[in-house]
Image (cartoon, rainbow, N blue to C red; front, side, top):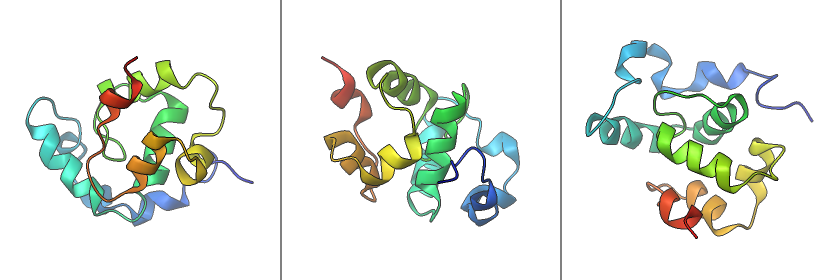
Amino acid sequence: MTSVVEDQSWVAKALCAGYEPDALFVQGATQRQVRLRCLQCEVRLECLADALESEANFGVWGGLTERERRAMLRHYTDVTDWGQWLATSTDPLAVEIRAPKVPKVLSHVRG
């Protein structure tokens, strides 16, 4: 299986592909608006997997903020293929991320 990081063909299908990059790398309340766009994107999970695999530090990717992604990386240290985990895991957070709503990542990863 080709990983999301290796196969970037999904990028052309992203809703944000035509946006100015500065519109996606925002902070604070503006992130909520960007996240809502992500929920409508057909390649949201591929985008999120790519950001997790590459440990993207800034911006909203796949509907998650950098804080949420960092928390996931700290909590799920055993995940070796984020694309597969996001698509198939029965973990409650993975299931919630697949749903078309903003997931409550931090509540899942806090002990």
